[in-house]
Structures are given as C-alpha cells and as structure tokens.
Length: 119
Image (cartoon, rainbow, N blue to C red; front, side, top):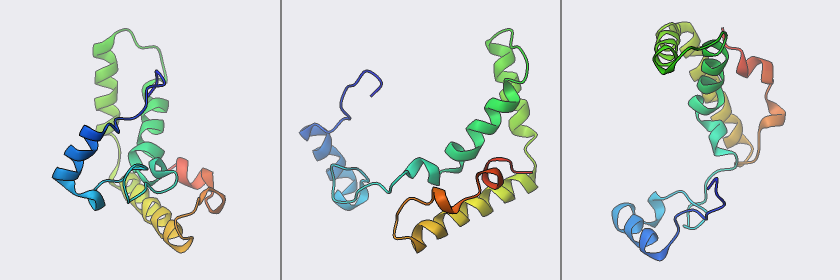
C-alpha cells in the first residue's frame, strides 16, 4: 500500500478468503465484518512494544545489522513480568472502553502518559 496500490481485494482473492474463512471470519472493509476503528491501537505490539523497543534499541549508535539484532534480542529478554502485566492490564482497559463506547474511538478517554510509559 505504500506505493498507492489498492489492497488485495480482487474477486479471486475474496473468493479464496471466503472459501477458507467464510465471510464472517474476515475483517475487512470489503466483507460484511468491518474492521474496528483504529484497530492497530488494540494490539499491544503496535501501541507499546514497537515504540518501547525503538526507544531503547536506538539509544546509541548501531554499527551493523548483527549489533541491531543483538540489541533487540537483549531488550526483549529484559522486559520484566511486571511490565508485561501492566501492558496486558492496559490492553484490557482499551477493550473495555471500546466495548462501553460502541466501538468508537477511545483516545480521549486514555491518559497517554499512563499507556506509553509502563514501568
């Protein structure tokens, strides 16, 4: 999609997806089950992990690809159980707020500093 190409919604692709998953098993604007608004915000990897890793991994210069891979691995292993528990609790909060607000946007209910800086 970065080159402005449309998503893969050709008839043959939709037929294949429907055959394997059924219309109700596919979340897309082009199927009966539309994707929830701002759905990337529902995924802890999108709203927390990637930002966290980017901040800690790129804290200093990186000499080569091997060093980058090592830093990513090291920082993933350094994530504490308490931090993961906090991430899950905030994910549940997001799901609850979305449910309570009929699937509408929830950003105005969230304290961004509480959701982005887990300890």
